[in-house]
Length: 353
Ligand code: HEM
Image (tube, rainbow, N blue to C red; front, side, top):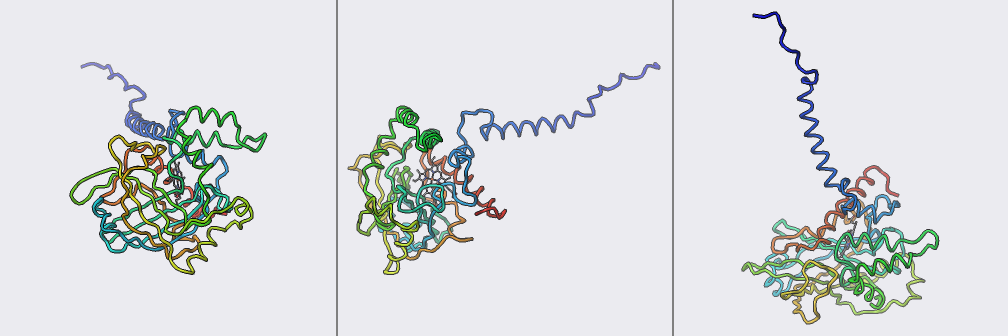
């Protein structure tokens, strides 16, 4: 027996359980910081991509891209050939209701429609098996670049120089030198004719997707919505003189005379075609299957609860259609979620103007 007292516990021992919690919380915070890209400044993340598009001047409450648009509704009717390619119900259900949005590129919800080089069609097809196919397509036939990082670079290189109000030619040249793949897109932007309507514009899915049919046969495809309305040109002086709502007004006048149609044209890849690079067109000779018709019956302004509040995420796909490994496609899903969250939060807070 001894009178000696046992050694006093270290003063920090009572803190041990808290240190454990702190370690867990710290670990989680580090994981979050890594995911968000804070620890790797060069890494492109969805919030960074959307920040780059916003350029510090978001149009609060609106889509951060394709902000100006109208809601549309109609239906999709498949051909028998569609079902030979994909087991998606949309190719066997006689008629699938479609809700969508026609829009123009750019972040300004009040920008003049006739001046926009890029027009877009987004759709949500709801089939009776409870599945959905969301599509978001543009009027250009291929994307300008191969990766989301290059897309962010392109936005930065195209920003107006505060001194001149125009993009800095040196920055643009440097961007083109780093990304020669942009030549295809530039040629399209400079030479493709402008049509005078949303209705006689072709909308392209751009990315490759994998179609699998009922027999389990899979192949990569790209799709386009090819207008059945005949092409009519919109001359530069008409574009300048047009009302801001020119395309929406023209569509309303046209729909008063009857529905507008597009053919869903599915192009089949062959071995060696670029699957994960949306900037590279496939050879013209690839087989094309007409898989159905989209019939647009109505157009109406965006409002609470309609197409305005949908995220047309192009990776939301039914059984029978799967995403490819295209990094731009994956980045779109992430960026649209960020844009959607920001605009919906702003609207809920009553900040939209
Ligand atoms: C990395 C590349 C891209 C980025 C970062 C991007 C970004 C965005 C963002 C932030 C939105 C707004 C989403 C929302 O708030 O709901 C949007 C809309 C849209 N984008 Fe993209 N985009 C990209 C590539 C593309 C491509 C390749 C296409 C065409 C195939 C496309 C077609 C569209 C369309 C049609 C809309 C409007 C959809 C609607 O009406 O809701 N985008 N984009």
